[in-house]
Length: 151
Image (cartoon, rainbow, N blue to C red; front, top):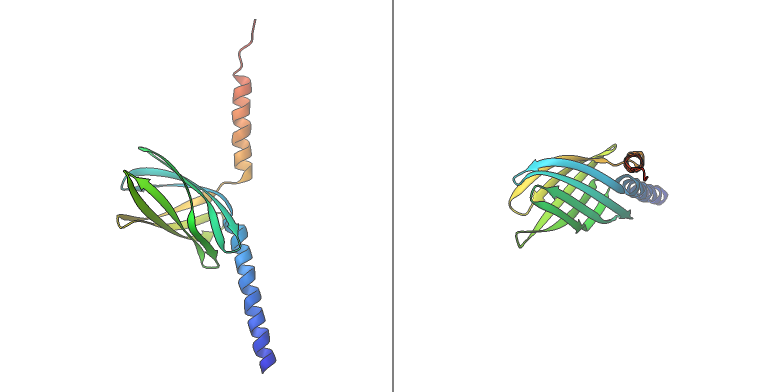
């Protein structure tokens, strides 16, 4: 009976480690999305770095009245999903924006709680390396094609 208990515990630990490794691989990288909020349309880019169960990175938000670029704090990942805090300074006020997210393929479905003011649900999509390369190549081609000939 003790052997069965040991096998069960070892199996559970192994599955937990596999789940964290999968989550680490899944959430790491760049993600982009947009949503409507009380202060208007916002477009966000998240760059997540995952080490074990810890998540760090940056959140860059663009809205009509400006851009914020902050470090993600209190980030963690588990088999249940991703959670982190975006500390935001808005009109000389410190606002804590809490996120929880669930992964579904190349999409994260977020719930975002902005202090005691608002809550939003929205999705972000993974920015694939191919997308970034195409944009870089297009920009280079445009720059190359727009050169003027010197006499």
